[in-house]
Amino acid sequence: MKIKILFTALIVGATIACGGGDSVNTEVAMPVWKTHCQLCHGADGKLGLNGAKDLTASTLSLEERIATITNGRNTMIAYESILTPEQIEEVAKYTMTLKQ
Image 1 (tube, rainbow, N blue to C red):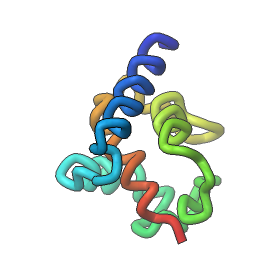
Image 2: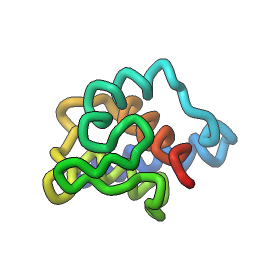
Image 3: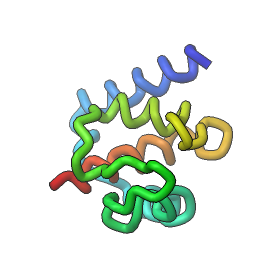
């Protein structure tokens, strides 16, 4: 599992270093968001159902968001075996756009 996280972090780092880290692939991110995230976080990231964090106020880095989505946190399940690394990265990037 640690190797998978390290590999994902390396891919994300390489993507950002190459200039591809700024844009969100909404064709990947939005279906994932609507299916897996929106129920607790809300359409705008502020809902907070079942203890979900307000993503508009989050100070987590992209890498930390990827790790949280991958491994879960508190009542949030781990999506490592549900989503692909690309889906996890894109939804993590999408959450960065929800900042206030």
